[in-house]
Image: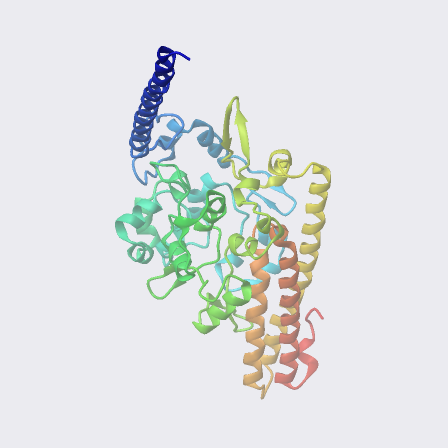
Length: 447
């Protein structure tokens, strides 16, 4: 090989090295630029909606009409709750009288407002109209009774604080309330995220060591319903809205809580028992290890199923019984809808039959306690025990009766509670025999 050829070979690697270094430099520059762009984008405000809003909604705006401008599908379906008065076998949204359907309720709630007026609830947009029309409201009613009835509430709670809100008389507070249940009860106006708006719910969760702001969106599709669909009571002279969850959310925990605080809603005029009235404990009942809850199903999956309007997918806000639209409500998970509907019927029929047995036992217990109290030389200590059994039994029965699913939300728990309630009612009867010293107290009662 000549000296000139060796010189060419030696120069080739040098030229290649320059090319490699040049390409490497270019790659490094591009990488640095890409990282810079990514950091810039990361620090920019993230969009909260897929589509820019038409109007800005004020924080805690109680008027759902304004929200409807940006979310017409959700709003138009919400509007249907005003007229969806359809009755199902054991509920629905037709405002029929429960007292006329089941006259035993008049006896069970004697001396309390529910013995005068107890109608099936209507849809969300009727909440304000119906609470003002009920015969259970009078001049002594506290403002607390508006707590689950209006989209004005989050704004009023923010302005007044819950203590001032609750102790304000119903009539006076009503002058500031104009809107039924609506968007502001469940959503953040800026992000549309589901939020806890009821201070009583937040206090109850905090007491359990829970922070709802850490919950997943799917969890919130159940928790947000607990703003209203829960057991609660009015605490103290200020009638402060309180969820009795301090000891747990099962019915035994709740009764224990009320017993410890020596709380009563009213005294039964015949048995003289210090009574408790359950509200609508859907959240506590459903989350007590029910089949659907353990499977990760949220309340909204069944009562507000996703639907489509053309290419738009949205949650249907026409909240009602899934039995009225099983294809949408149940069809996302179940293929044999005929089986599902029949299965629901079997469960609800079984619960209703068991509930009838429990009600008969309670009516008999009331009659026996009244008769024993009129017996000369009755053992007052044993009579007090009978009344305690009556109190526990009726609250357990009412936990299922007031819950809006006729046991379907948690069928095993419903039957367990009703069986225990029946047993307690019969124990109350037996205790009256011991108290009176004679079985005559059972005469005239259902045995």
